Length: 195
Image: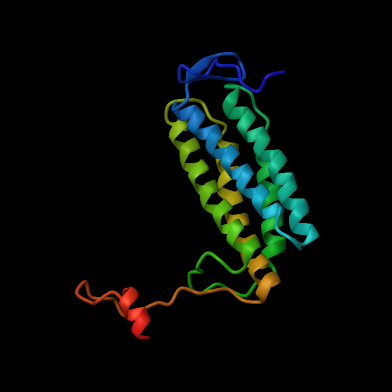
């Protein structure tokens, strides 16, 4: 079986029901962003030394995201319901239980796994926005939107857990840092040589 079909050379792609639509259609943007989220989670799962309970949870999420993408690719089909959302909430509560209260914004980072998880979180937020855009012109399962919203929260909490797992701390945003003047000189190569 050949990987290429040439059927998309005209800028269209096929949905699950055989309908062909433009590759930049809101529906394609929606399920494409869900696919990107799944891939970003795959990067998190490829991190060395990932705790087993997190790996199990995120692997299950990857299967869920295939269902969400399937719903978006096959209009009218339903695979996600509120039980999926409840399962994410239970995982959120479990992983969040031992974390210290959050009083400042966290800078994305905290080790390879945590940083990858922050990327997955932001990609998930984009997927949520794309699915919301689609919902304004097409029938979208509300549970799928709730799922993506809760998933981004879960990825944030998992990033916090992984930051502690890797190095024991998170980098907090420094509130009230002095603003730089537009007239301030920017150190260049010559400044580095003098230093």
